[in-house]
Image 1 (cartoon, rainbow, N blue to C red):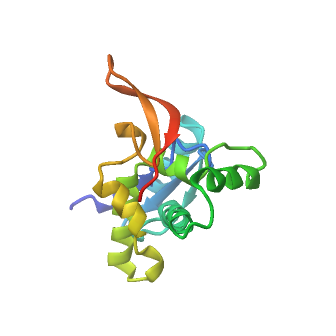
Image 2 (cartoon, rainbow, N blue to C red; image 1 turned 90 degrees about the horizontal axis):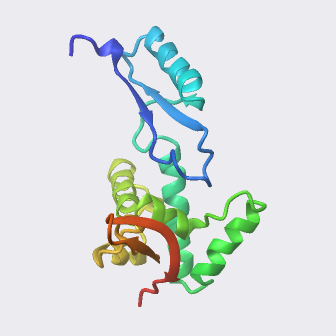
Length: 179
């Protein structure tokens, strides 16, 4: 409490995802953060980490969480409405990206963690009360069924899990269809 001018946040949640510009980190100063701390953080992110940064105001969800959570939620709505298959939804995103990434929304969701996406959407809905943050029922069902994504070996897709190390080898194998 005595050194509020030193408080600053960085958002690394989407840090490892290749579909999102993984060279960018969100820097979030508080109202009390000093200019010198902001400048030190910028230098650390750009020089020490070799990443780009954006400085944003402190709001629930930051920028990346708000954009990506709604995008992924909509992918589940498209699937639930039987507009396209899981594979086709992932494929169209790869084509939109001109092959720059093979991560479609479901591969991305599995990597982030379906439970994490639900938590983000629930928090955004509590904060803003907007319909766009209401979690899709199919996404909720995946989570209720214990299908959290790569971290547990099954999400929208199933993944091979290395039993010796207890680690996931991240190889996508099959699509898990919810009924």
